[in-house]
Length: 235
Image 1 (cartoon, rainbow, N blue to C red):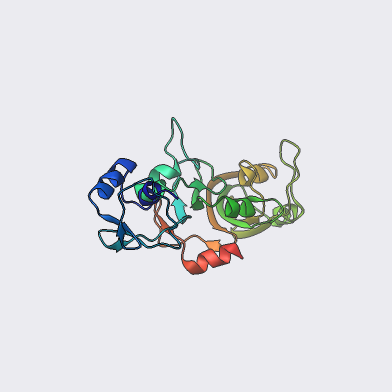
Image 2: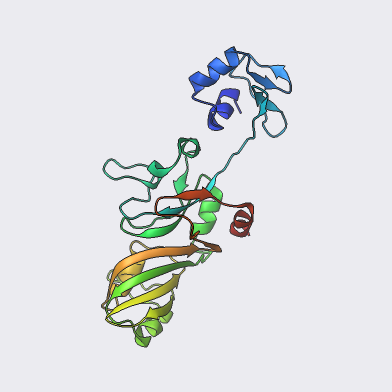
């Protein structure tokens, strides 16, 4: 990897700012001052320092975000704020992307990373990665709905969903539920309830795979995954 790319990726400034650091003899590789920003280095095998501070190379980032409503799950958009817009510039420079999507008006757990292989594994239909949602429903959710979801329901376009585990948290004309599904079709939770003549009025994703939303994260906040969480995710 080129030295200027490594340093800029690790937050030491733009390529132009890194060039100034190198020109000022602030950068060393294995103890030797480097004067060429295009020098190729192996950050795993060589010791790169800036003003004596060891540069710890990080290829991938893994972020858990409590996505707020009104923000879209995309890397860029001409009209709406995206989840990437909520990130610190240090994390943005890794060129991360959301794993799957949450609807614009939906909040909750969202994983953001630049690890393409992990993303593929989590989103692959063959993996059946479960996702759990909490929702408020306009309509009385009953045992018949639990049974219907357990068999899968037919959406308005004719697609028959895979089984979902529906649990009633609060019964009544305005019900509260938890739903576990293993798919991620467009507006799937909302469309599943529409298939049983009910309407979702509030939706929040609580978990994805083995990871649950950190209750200490306020809307719009995020943090890096812990080592234990990352190990769970990669199992």
